[in-house]
Image (cartoon, rainbow, N blue to C red):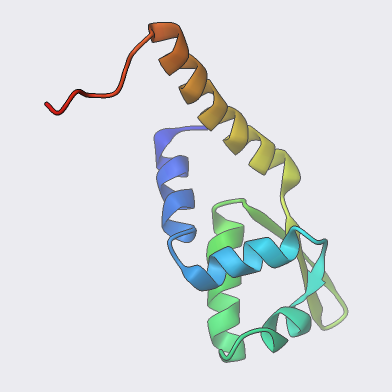
Length: 102
């Protein structure tokens, strides 16, 4: 995972609506129509949000007939979690302490 991917993920998660969608998908795959019911947004706006989440690989989608279904991309999220865990481990290994008011 490179820094551009991390930046795109952070940009995607800067929207409260997209964060709420991610939280919904943590309960399992959802049809777009069920996601739309939870928000006071239009279908094109939901489509935009889902496009952003899919483009940064946090969410995967599948089409069944005329319906779109969305789910978390668990493998990619595990990779993202590993990236942040590695940052924490690096800091611990370095023995750095917080800045003392510099």
